[in-house]
Length: 287
Image (cartoon, rainbow, N blue to C red; front, side, top):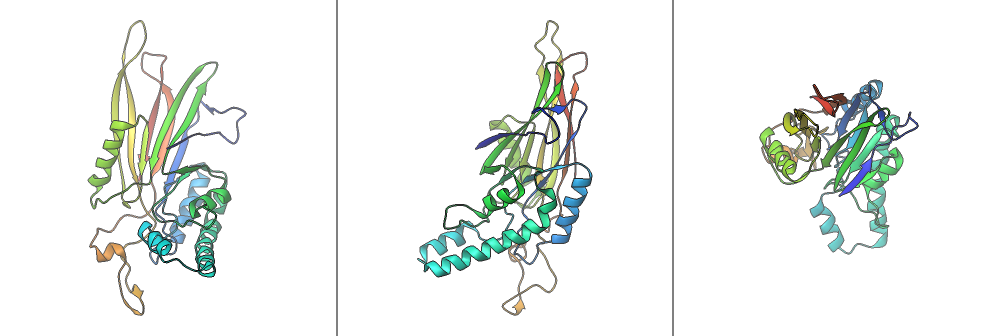
């Protein structure tokens, strides 16, 4: 698990101004290389996000090359070096194609996770790491905690902790991913919980109540957001073929439900709790 602290580009300190709003768009499960990948939708999402001053978080499965079982099978095949080099080049070509779409967002990524669909090159680096280098994004590995700090001079600060994981296992309903996030909330203290993998675009806002540490204690509400971060790969496509015959995707073959495409938008800003000087966070999420 990696912890990174967000460093604003346009400020001299590591804090965001108190009167600012942090807008975040988690982007993941693109599966570039698969027939269902929607590059036009991704391009529009990035373009609009940049116009709105958003930052991005990579949720994994950016390329569709290759699943964990595919990687294991290729390792056991004991391929010749020339064949391995050709496979490396094919994976890198997908990363290069994706960089062309995401290039306008260089420097606007809070971090990127590793998904279960990716490629490990001969030097031990991965397709996700290559994407991070090109986009100047911190590599979060399997699970990340991103800290964003707001400051009201001279001393008041409040930190937003964003817990992010690519996800694992199955779950065909929106409740499936929310159940996983509720379990994560029991083990990890954060303000925002993000998970991909299941291609579900779903969010829930919950509340936690705390007692303030003051001479006259007050009950303070601090909201939390749980969010399945969506996908950019259509599971059902009319006319899809494989080897010249009609053949559906994994989603179609498993009779999984189609998912709404795109990403959520999360907005976060600080405020003082009612009747208290204690700073808290307010958040909204739109799908």
